[in-house]
Every structure is written in structure tokens, then in C-alpha cells.
Image 1 (cartoon, rainbow, N blue to C red):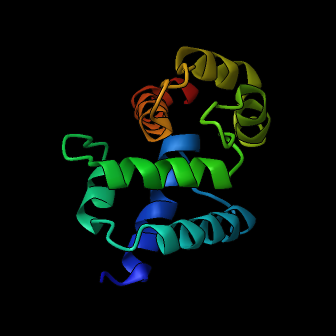
Image 2 (image 1 turned 120 degrees about the vertical axis):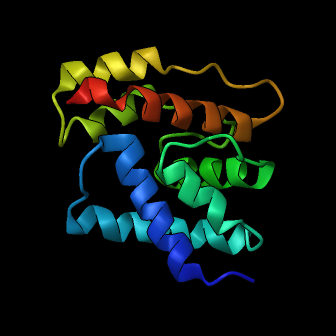
Length: 139
């Protein structure tokens, strides 16, 4: 079993990089840490190298376990509901705290992913991949 500390660090860095493109404040770090720990309890076999690749924007080796970790993370953050549908309004509300609202709205619209009919892990992954790819538009 992998140590949760490096995974936790990767998860927090991943969240910061993917969602806001800038460092998280202390409160956000504590929340993200709680989300990551809860999700890591469910995905004990998660490959830390996959999370490190995600953090660096490399999505080439993402596996099903990693995608489901991302779903868990988005659900814990309330960016995604239990049915695998992204909550665009909530995402905009939360990300607009540290970013210009119009830019966040454009990003969320561009990365609006229809829920995968049978795989909410895939939906989460596609959203995260798009947010990462398009986050420069927030700068």
C-alpha cells in the first residue's frame, strides 16, 4: 500500500493546478486535504505516479482507479453530484472567489461535459482534463 502523504500532496497540488491555476489558501488546503483523505480511503490501490503525471498535465497513463478518484474528489468538493452531473453554477461560484467571474464562466462553459451515460468516473476525468488544458484562459 502506498503512503497517503505523497498521494495527498499530489491530490492537493492537482486540485490547485487544475481548478484555479494558482496556490490555494490555508482554508482551501485543509478542505482539499479532507476531500483527498476521504477519497484515498476508497481507492487504496491508487497509483501515486498517475497522480504525479496528472499534476504535471500528463493524462496518458490515467487508469480507471485514477478516474474514479477524480470523481470522488469532485463529488467531495460538491463540483459533481452523486449521479455524475457537474454542477456548473457551484463550480463558477467557488472558482470566482479567486478568479474573474467572466473568465471562470467561459472556462466552465467550454469544459461543460455531458454526464457519461454509464461512467461518472469518465465524466470527472474529461472535466478535469479540460479544466487543466484550458486553465491558462483564467490568467
